[in-house]
Image (tube, rainbow, N blue to C red; front, side):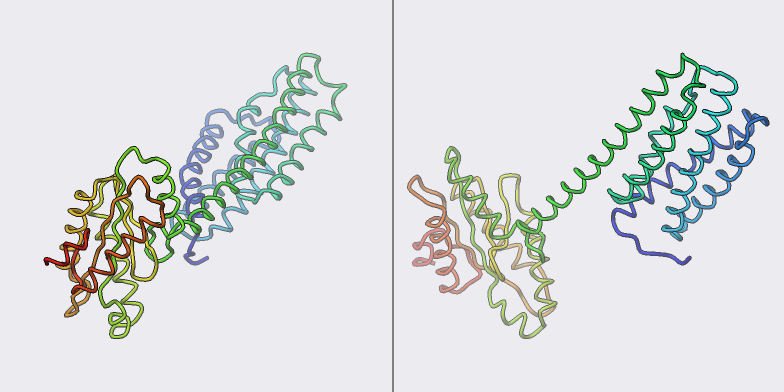
Length: 349
């Protein structure tokens, strides 16, 4: 059992097991040392087995080895332990000795089913849990006439509550799974895969929300990497991708809570800023200066051109973006590596 690479969910489960296994080991050892009843059928055998098995499993998890083996071992152990212990409680304690308590079963049984739903997928966990529940219910049903009158109501509530636990865990797992899928789909739909910033679809969502609420100023900064094709031609697309990723990080470091960055496409980006045009222009100039002084590639300076425009009362989303894009175009046409917020900026520059 060599070291294995676990996915994110398996890593989370591994951390959970590393925390919870010592609790099981300690409680089993404590019960064996201080509270062992030699007259009980299973405890003298089961408790040492649990201590040894979970200790070995914990060591394997610490060493990041045998994760699947530990999960299967855990699944078998908790199932067998519960069935044997529950039979002991019902047959020996309640039926034979006429005790009027189920004991600690109501406290520990929910943890059993939580373990099952952590280890197995939805349907398999439900089926495995249901088999164990049917065994519990069958024992009470078989010995119903032999149960003390005072224990029957406890038995009924216990079985019904466990059934509710199983149903709840099944649908809870389903809900968590569906939410995770929805979050992933949303991330894929609204995030740029390479840079991790918003994509064009997300930017349009932001712009439309801003268009509906014009109570505060909204400015758009369009920016484009100058001569980016040369970067790909000379250094290759992997280096080009590295430049795009570093550029997004550099820009994000300059943004406040009032500004949001997105990738418009290719080497072109857009910043939505809840600031006036003058404030947005200062932000654009800061970013332009930071990019100019940053070393992306040795002996190959990288610069950007930017166009800045503010939303007007009669604007649509498209008209705002088109004006900002036109200003970006004029910035590139007039020499690049500059900010344009007005055509006059270029006439007198």
